[in-house]
Image (cartoon, rainbow, N blue to C red):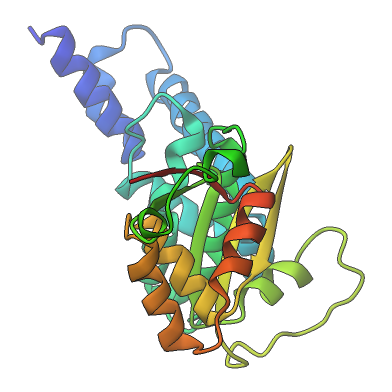
Length: 254
């Protein structure tokens, strides 16, 4: 006699491995295989479509058949660990990076990463903007030791490929079939939600270095030093003012 836990674990394994013979002994009645196949088909279909909703550019780049094949492999090798289906696809970019059939598409994993960051930013928490008056009482010496906090809906991404251009020309509203040279250069990107829309903003190397250091919890002084290595003319005051005004920086601590 099998326990309920054993039955549930075996059932889940059978569904993931698409092998209804594993649990035929546990299902009563006629047409056992047909009835179990319904569970298998529905689960794979639903999870494939969840991935397709998050990764429409990847789907367009590789085509439906390739995407379905990759998604089926991903579902089997990365079973969902959360009751929230919105979190299911977070390993898909790293999966594509090591997926043998995608080996010739060197830009695909980074494109998928950008799509996941767009998805994350859309669902991230909101935050009130930072008021300049909150900074006005700080002494100059204190300002250098500030640790600014970025908005929870901000994401940063550095890619060796022109992923923003790849993303743009594969949007539904794109009016051309423009081809993108994957070797045309790299991108430093800020992905953030503004209202109910996600915006992708290209950054200069210095601004990306500054923002990345702040996100990692470094002080203004230390982050500024990293930015200056990229651009000796980097204007710290202009950066801080702009990023407070556009709500990229929403808090600080000493």
